[in-house]
Length: 135
Image (tube, rainbow, N blue to C red; front, top):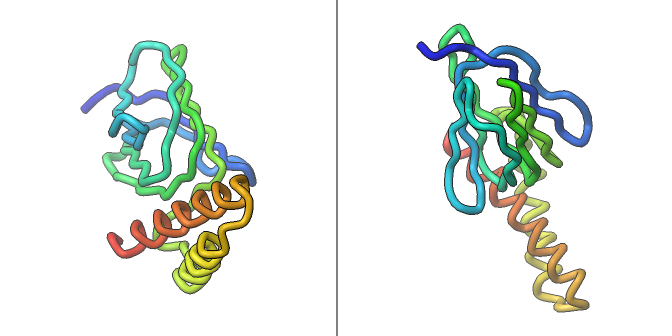
């Protein structure tokens, strides 16, 4: 068992988790990253996907996260993301509706900014749905 360290997840709507963990694994644009106690200090971009962390009582927790950053310093890790929710809390009907809206916006091909926003919305909806079907 590895040594526990302080971990915090902060989403745009508040603190999602705060406590001691053994390890955290999350997605970056270069692949998955795992941070354990006494990792070197770093700031890294977090990508859409599944974030997993193991608490001191050896229980794995799964969280669907949006984009953001993670900072590891002084044996503490803070993850700041735009969205964060448990896979079982995802409203599948709402996520499917968001995916359909984003697809329709992509088909309309308005401005470049609107197109990129629709792409981001579609990616978020697909990520939420993908993680709920893995539960």
